[in-house]
Amino acid sequence: MTRASAALAVLAVVLIALPAMVGNYALSVVTLILYFAYTGQAWNVMMGFAGQLSLGHALYVGVGAYAAGGLFFHYGVGPWAGLWLAMLLCVALGLVIGFLAFRFGVSGVYFALLTIAFAEFTRVGFDHLDWLGGPGGMFLRVAQRDTWDILNFRGPPLMYYYAILFLCGAALALCNLLLKSKAGYYWQAIRENEEAAQALGINTFRWKMLAVAISSAMTSVSGVFFAFYYNNLFPEQIFHISRSIEIILGPIIGGVGTLFGPILGAAVLTLLSDGITEGLAAMGWEIPGIKQVFYGVVLLAVIMFLPNGIWPFIARKLKL
Image (cartoon, rainbow, N blue to C red):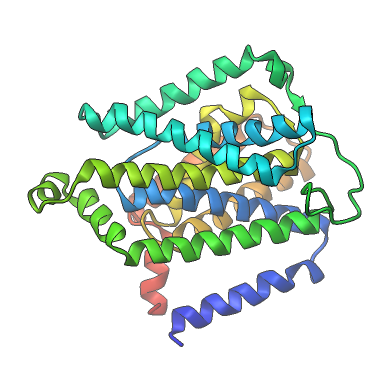
């Protein structure tokens, strides 16, 4: 076993045993960290592996959440059936955006603007969709929070913790396989120099579309988890660009294109931002927007001193 594999195994054991060692508040914080780690990993497939910058991934979170939540709210259909609808809709949306962009040569910052535009259009549309609650929001029924109802994905916070922990582990394993596959090598070639990749005979359109499809499908799963964990959905919140920024900050700070970077970045950001917020509240200070200011300061510091992210620096020091 390599040193990296041993460290990962130790981390897995600690996370599995963690609920026995911490209280409910700490468990909710770690659940939030794992949620951002998973969504960051999903975004990392598109940007970190294939080099396609998306600033509208809240689109897939929101559509996935509303697809599964709407079926449960109106028809009592469990999230496992809703999950397939969520993935289908999000992949279809991703492929439409990808086709419009890649077929007509839209890339870089213009592709990023296109993803923001689609997320905003969807937010406005859902604001006027009364069947899903409109601007007043949609609230899912909650019952028997003390028992594990796997079929309807209802239960205590411990159940949601282990569910998102499993998703993080599965995403890490999937991304590891993708990086070592033919698709992973093609994506990295496209990311580094798309013209050179085309000259080598790589069908860049096809492989970029595959990256978009996988990333959007993975992100839709996080949307379903969001809906059944928080039990309320508001278009203004879930489709807002700030949601997309929260998704991408973890990978950027941890290390874009790395496997462990999104996990480390999510942990650093969540722990420090929550610590600052709680510390200020303890002193009686309520400063609106302090979390966003903190995100900006951390992002600026990482770009200036660790442009490749925190994880590559740590990995070199620990020889992982």
